[in-house]
Length: 285
Image 1 (cartoon, rainbow, N blue to C red):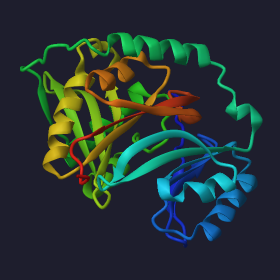
Image 2: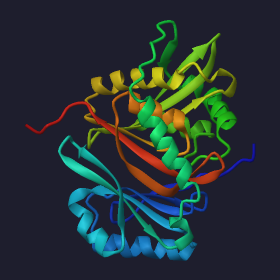
Image 3: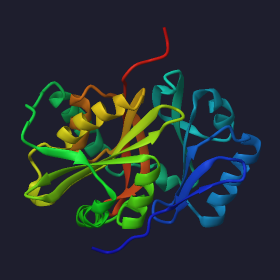
């Protein structure tokens, strides 16, 4: 495979956390974190223009939407009860390159949406013989190699054992399935413990082991683990072109939150992504 370098994540002086770079050609506002929008929004605009990116993708509390709307952001997806089971989240896009807003595979995305709905009621049987466990730092070299084997490109540094080790120690729980003593499938739960939400992500199965429903079994295990850690809302940002992963989340009872247009460089191209969510429990009466 051709080695690709992920976009970088950084915390701005105003407190917001962003990711940006030439791989996905975007700025991703990951956490608003109470930042002063009058300071933040001009900074994001400057960053995009300076680097000639095509898009800003912002994940924000719904209460901050109006100021972003005034700056030209458009709603692309929505997750209710995202922050501590109380405040909703909005996923916004602002486009600096008109071509970035055009989905050349729109018909395919729409067709996969129809397939997902049609297959969502099917409930595959669980395989009680699978060996599913949490990954440890002893696994990071093997994990990184599996991710290299599966993804030609990826927006985060999952090819790097040090990145896996670092995030494992901080806020990400990695899960794996073993077969004959070898890791054959992976996933991760990226927790925001302060806001009590978790992103179910980084699903990867070795090509020769696909078709056994490993992602479904990983997700079941992840949900149980995240409930025990006090997470309230769980979600994913899934490739809109991949029927399989969308069907898995639909079957697991997730609701469709919207589509992020030409948002993420994954598997070699910038692709649109679907948002799916589920609430385990809520603080609302």
